[in-house]
Image (cartoon, rainbow, N blue to C red):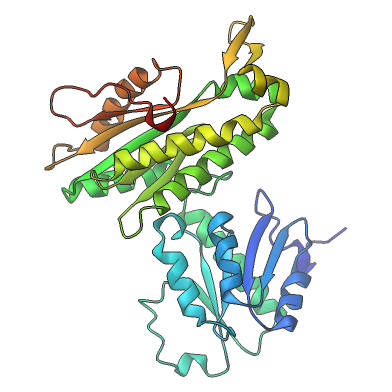
Length: 335
């Protein structure tokens, strides 16, 4: 048992275990980091080379990235720039580790997008304090969804309103899952959370498949997500998303339910009913030529479109080009 003065007690203020990705060839530094917190409070994923960590960073973003300036295969700042260039991962805080005399370098502090720094020689009290404060600062300033770590409601609203105020053309897609509650009721919250995380990954990876565009992905909560893209590519993204989701989601069911193509579960009134396999519905609102003036307009239009989309029992998307008539629901690749 730890006491209040035990350094390992630092970090107890967090509601869940924190995940830190550490990029350094310095084995002693990695050992120091692992010794500062119990495994139950802080998971340290150590990589000695930058390229070896990139896939992990994108597929399972950490709560904190600690990057050594002295990596054997690429500059530490290149890793930081790569992560921060992806809009979805910009919220991951970064601590940059400098060598002796690092403050005398010509580092561009404004352009580097690091959140804090450490300077060698490293001492346990300073490392512990810097890590703890960076995580605490990030948790206070960012409303990330605790399950998927995607931006939450506040960030979503701010982003939509910011684009509206700048009169930028954009497509705003609201996505949610059909028959998710029945799945949750039968298989339990743990398996339900796996579906929510899978959905987040599918959306993020689909958007990443359109390089060089301005994009944003957020998690409103539960099985509701949003993503923002240029109007010209959003329909292609919806088609890919529907096809990928429908290809993956059956694997979350038990074999007998998967073969039947439905499950039996209790509805909201307590009656036993038959429910199809989960599907994804996407409602897309367009802001063209500054038509929207407030994010509430987009949300209201999307709610109407989602009702239309849910009339289709299969995964589908509905486009509203705000030209008087709503497009019919489109099933994408699997409809």
